[in-house]
Amino acid sequence: MADANIFDRLKQDHDTHRALFAKIADAAKDEKQLEKLFDQFKVEVSAHAAAEEETLYATMLARPDLREDAQHSVSEHKEIDDYLEELDELKFNGEAWRKKFAEMKKRYLHHIEEEEEEMFPDAAKELTADEEDKLGKLFAKRKPAELERAQAED
Image (cartoon, rainbow, N blue to C red; front, side):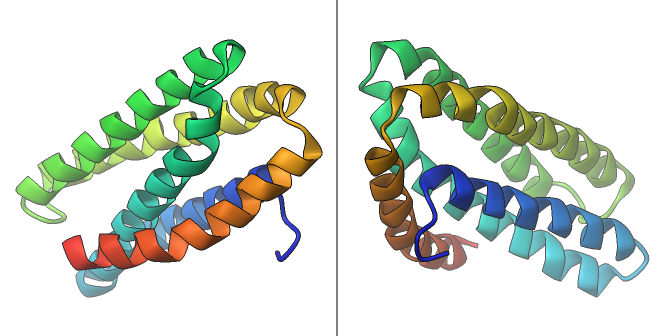
């Protein structure tokens, strides 16, 4: 991934998140494994969102043609964060938690699909290849720091 641009890096993270959802579904009967995977998901998604906002979204917000897409995605990140906070307040793996998790999963999958199918292609039309590569490198630097921060908060 050394030469990956921002869109490649973000898509790779999205694929990791989809894989975590699959593992979470498989672990439904193993509460300890489920909790471990859910905690991993929370940390991963939180770090991803922060690094994405600091790199791609910050760049998009500075461009009038891309600003609206970036604002929309930032608001969806906040929505997912709110879901995660609500989940933390519910009895883990109880009926209400499972229902709220299913809602969050649906919203998150919609969000990343929208990014990949609409926002990334729109942004790619406006960004140069050099900008995409620089943002990819910046994301690669930011993400580990954000993972550390997210793990400390969890």
